[in-house]
Image (cartoon, rainbow over all chains, first blue to last red):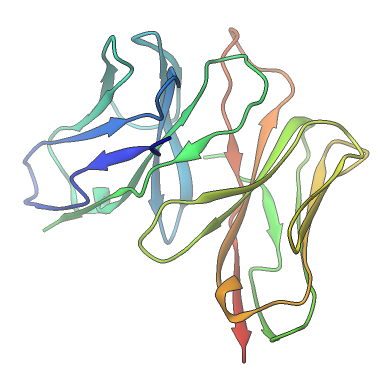
Length: 115
Length: 115
C-alpha cells in the first residue's frame, strides 16, 4: 500500500505570495492532518480534515487554510507569506476519526522557504 | 502550541549501547505514539500504545505506556549507526472535543550513535 504523498517536496516563494500544498493520504484513510515543523517550535498542529470538513484546528492565523476533497486528498493554502512561514509542512493520514487503531502516518513533507 | 516534555533533548552514545528516552505530560493521554524522523523526511511511526501499562516491542525498540497515563518511555537496545535521528513522542489527550482528535508532540530527542 502506498504511503502518504505530498507535492511539491520543495518550494521557494517570496514574501507576500501565496502557496498551495497538496497531500494524498494512504488509500482508505479518510482523516488528514497538517503540521508545521520548525527548529524553534517543533511540530505544531495546523488542522485536521475528515469527510471534507475541518474537524479540529490549531492556533495559527487565518492565513493558513485547508480543504479536503471527496477522494480524501487535501490541500493547504498559506496566503500573504511571511518569512516566519518557512518550515517543513507535514501531512498525516489515519483511517478515520475515532477509529482504533489511532495510528497516524506522515508524508515526507514539503519544505517551504520564504525569501 | 502545547507540547510534551521529552527528555533527553539529545544524546551521544556508543554503538551497541542501550538508549532510553521518555515523555511526560500534566494531562492524561489515551494513546501514545513514537516516531523517528530522519533529516528532510517525515516522521516514521515506530510504536503505538493504547493501554496504561502496555509494553510493546518492535525489533530492538520497546515502548511503554505509563501507568499514570501521563508518560511514556522508549528504549532502544544494542544501538546501531542507523538509529541516528530524532525521536518524537506524540500523545492523544483523553478528552477529545467534539469527537475530534488532536495529537500533541514532544520536543524530540536527537540521537547520535558513535561507531
